[in-house]
Image (cartoon, rainbow, N blue to C red; front, side):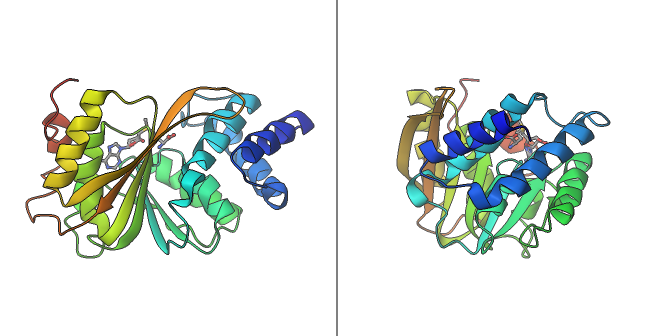
Length: 244
Ligand SMILES: C[S@@+](CC[C@H](N)C(=O)[O-])C[C@H]1O[C@@H](n2cnc3c(N)ncnc32)[C@H](O)[C@@H]1O
């Protein structure tokens, strides 16, 4: 990473109240691996150093706002893509086990290889669909937190995420600006699958100023057996949400 890239990462993290000094070498290695892999496989549209530092690294670190991941033992990143936010979070929070999940094998191959190269023993990447894991005893009700960034509308995230949470667990969704209609549908969907929206935290990204929202859904009761519905249905027929 260039000195300019390091400065951006330091500044972005500092605006989030984080000190990344000790983690700079890991972020530099992640940047290098991502740029190199992207020349062979199309993993991410972001290709320049400032874009990756701000829109992947700092953006992912914004999931730590509010301390919603503090003390979590098991965290699953639903729809991790090339490992975001899971890899930056795993670098910052080594005492937590992160399970980056994606249905696309080449993305998880990259996440696994990268975690091994960075010696992130707290990363256990998984290929699969959230609908399938949500019905699998090895994963259902197994996680303290679900995190996700830029994956789906809130009602879909509620249906995919809540079955994976232990009772009392929390889904932490990082999104762009959210409409009142999506939020309302998300509240209704959360109630349907055993949860409640407890936090809607609108903020702007460090340095760039882009609008973001962190939404927390707490699992307040059991998720009915019928959820999640079979693969693809949560996306095709989102609960309480037709405005797509
Ligand atoms: C727009 S990308 C975002 C990736 C990453 N979270 C990021 O912010 O860079 C959405 C990802 O979610 C994955 N995805 C969508 N629905 C999924 C599901 N039901 N189960 C597992 N992965 C899913 C897709 O394969 C894709 O890689």
